[in-house]
Length: 462
Image (cartoon, rainbow, N blue to C red):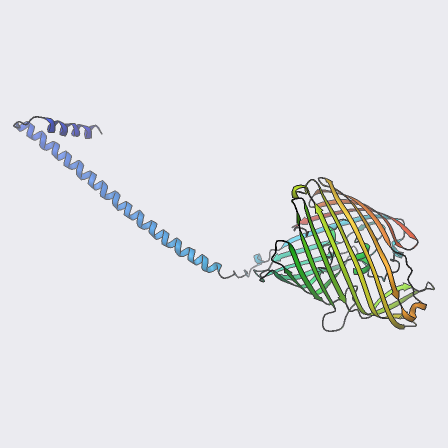
């Protein structure tokens, strides 16, 4: 830097000095200075050329990178246009796994072995209050996963306290059908009613309402096909239909081709402000049981076996109203829920199939309903009240009225519950029920239940 400044000052001095004849000494100095200036100029020019070459090289590299990035983007876009193939390796099978553990202690004032709802046809084994004392509830093992871009699969295995394993649900479901449509195939809970499609561990009470026990055997599931269509509207509107084997109550085991049951349902819902929401539903189920057998007592008190063949139709209306302050139910919320059932059956009934086997026409029209309210009054704590009632309606056995008859008694039950949920994965519930489902019998029922969820925990339905 010092040398460069000295040269500049020298040049400036030479240009400012008056003209005179140079001496030999001065001429030598001037030549030296000019040589140094030329050397500096050449150095700077070389440096500039070097920088220009580097700049051109960098610009060329950037252009190549841009072209490469554009080509890569085109390849990615082309690949995205085609759905990826499912990897054919062990890692491709990676479903969500869940396990529901449940247990109950029951204190019953009446013997549950003799439980049978008055004036209604027995509907299966999953009815009544269960056994006294400690019992292991139904354990559910669930697996669910997207299969590929087009299908979703789910299986739920039920392990009973009697060491039996049953398939509760096992179905595949479409993911990419147009216009809000969806197909399901396999074994599944029917879409009729509000509570029917929900697994038992999501219920607000220990047991199913009396109407579900009388008309659907506790919960109606079947093997078959289900179709759903969600309307493209701001209000929730969904329609659905099902074709099934129809082997579960109110149907019976079949040995024929074709569908044994048909069902239709519709659901409508929406919001009222920020704090309220609602849903209404209607459903219809038609089954064609053949030789649906059941045991009952005739007018003499004798245990007999009877068999019904014909047509069974069930209509269901349901409604739900939910409240949560500003839509946030973490601290406080309220749910009002109710369903109405009406069943009509026509066909032929065989009385005392093991002995007399007397067959004649049969016709019945019966109904039932329940209403319940569940209030979360503080975080993790809820209290609930439920009332059930059935109407025995009219039952005509034709000539078999000489052996079988129904009274006008209306089975009923009142239940209260209190539950505590430390987290979304655990719940402890206390429930008391005054059960008058048997004519002339009052049963005080106390339950203490735990429910625990392990693994993947999907969102519950509305």
